[in-house]
Length: 182
Image (cartoon, rainbow, N blue to C red):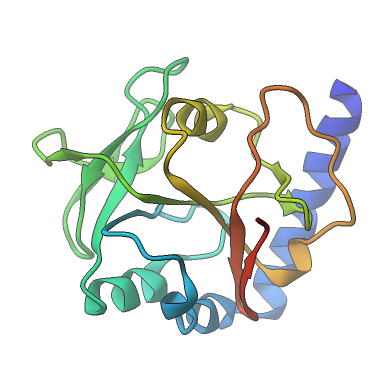
């Protein structure tokens, strides 16, 4: 199973990279669907790395709609992430996982909705992540938060084999719109 997941991740990374190259405006179109997201006062985004779908257009749309934004921060590798308030343009630093994150002086907040990058998703809310477990640990620690994948529509697969620690998404937002799973 682990070998299969490793191979699936490798193939999904390659596909996501191709999707990013073929459709560089996908993130902007996905941001156009921000109003379709479930209601939430505080929304956690992420800063895109590599071929992850960029959140800049979505962040601008959410901020314009009056939603407060935050970003995840890995403080300890085996613990749930914390979330720090953030607005586009504010300075970032690298967290314990090597991801861009707000500075330690930023207010720690509890998001109502968490947007997550992913490698693949299915129509049952299954999500294939990078394999570090950061989002699954965080989802387990914040069960009331709405969990939304942010991805290219082409990252959809028929069915993902989930393990007991894998936590399903409530929906996914792509360049073609928002889909709820529950």
